[in-house]
Amino acid sequence: MKKSRIGVLRLGYRLVRDDRITTHLGLVARAFGADIIYLYDCDKSVKESIDKVTKRWGGSFESLIVDRWRDVIREWKDKGSLIIHLTMYGLPLQDVIDTIKNFEKDLLIIVGAEKVQKEVYMLSDYNVAIGNQPHSEVAALALFLDRYFEGKELNREFEGAKLKIIPQLKGKKVIRL
Image (cartoon, rainbow, N blue to C red; front, top):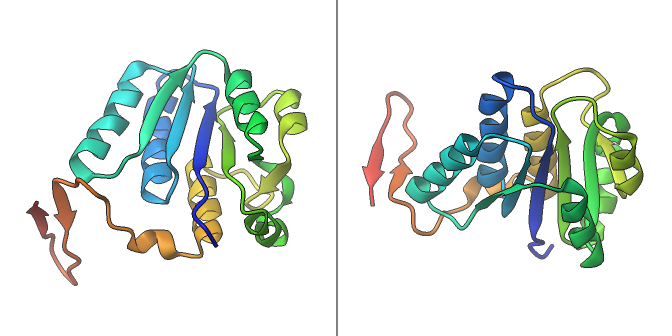
């Protein structure tokens, strides 16, 4: 499978709670193989936190604050990308992941913070559920990307990294590059 470009669009923002959750969403997107995250209606400190991690730990991951989420979806749709909305109301991940991978298209993955507008469900090519129970949107993104990349994303090397973890049975070892 060729490497498709993968974007993540974060919709919604609940004060206080979502600074940390949205930051974690960006970190998971970066670590698990996405190329960019679009942050809609969020504090600029979230972007700064994600960018700081990318600078220290490497890679070419981008984070952008956007004013109009519909424009992001239209831009990706106009390029022929597949629009995936992660929601507990969608089709089971295990039933659709192979179909999604077989398209070999770029993906825009939409992850909501609160009640998502009906329009998002209609604009998406696939509404995908990581289980049909309430759960973390961070976990949903991690599971989707892990299934999409079949675990291979966990072995990536990040170019330009200033730090690297050396796996240990016990303790911690981080080296400066």
